Amino acid sequence: MTTKTVYQTDADGYLLAPLVLDASDRDPMEPARWLLPAGAVEEAPPEPQSGAIARWTGSAWEQIEDHRGETVYDQETGAASTILAPGPLPAGVAATPPEPTLQERCDAVDALRDSKIAGGFTFGGTAFQTDPNSVKRIAGTASAAHIAITLDGAEAGDLRWADPDSDFVWIATDNSLVEMDAPTAIAFGKAYLAFERRLVFAASAIKARLRDGEDFDIETAAEWP
Image (cartoon, rainbow, N blue to C red; front, side, top):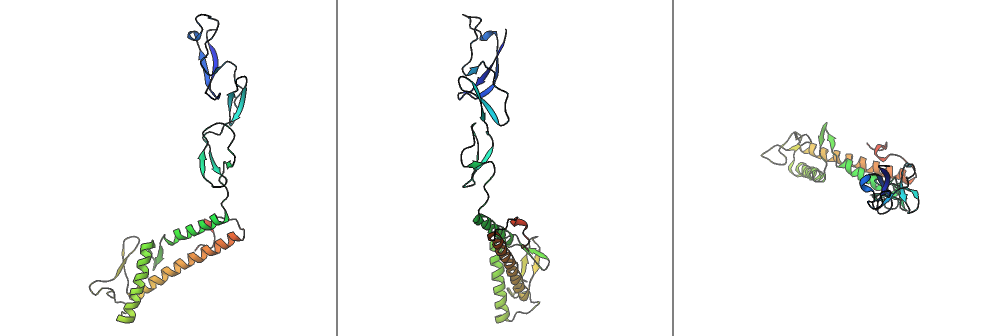
């Protein structure tokens, strides 16, 4: 025999790969004897099983579960981790995330509601921004317009109700300038409030369904306007 196949294992006995020895691996003092590298096993391992790895116990091969590289989820916290070593899955983890709690689902509804509120709305056929700073400006403008009408007598068509030297305009989402007189500015504020209110009440109705035990996709719930 000019070559000999052995099976290299790691420090824990797990099979790495076949290793072919040649004449240089024979014992020069006993040519019939092969010099095996540390961790090499002469006995062939069993046929590999799906999801398992062969391990040499010191006297025989055994098949060990192998989930290395798989992502698992803590069934209490939902935290994800990657399996790095062979063996059964640790206690308390699974290949799928745990089902969200009722509170977590309700929190997700609130987050989706807030995202929709901040995502902009349409007034008079034009899209406007509704991030927190824009909402403050909308409220402040509506309040100023109300004062301009009640105290200064601002009328429809008067675009200089806020500044006598320039027309009042609002920058839309597309960066176009939208002229607004005082009554329009008030209507603009009311339209935003109605937009926000619809989303708040939609979210409330969706959470009520969840608390009643219904199981559905909150993102496509019919309550959303």
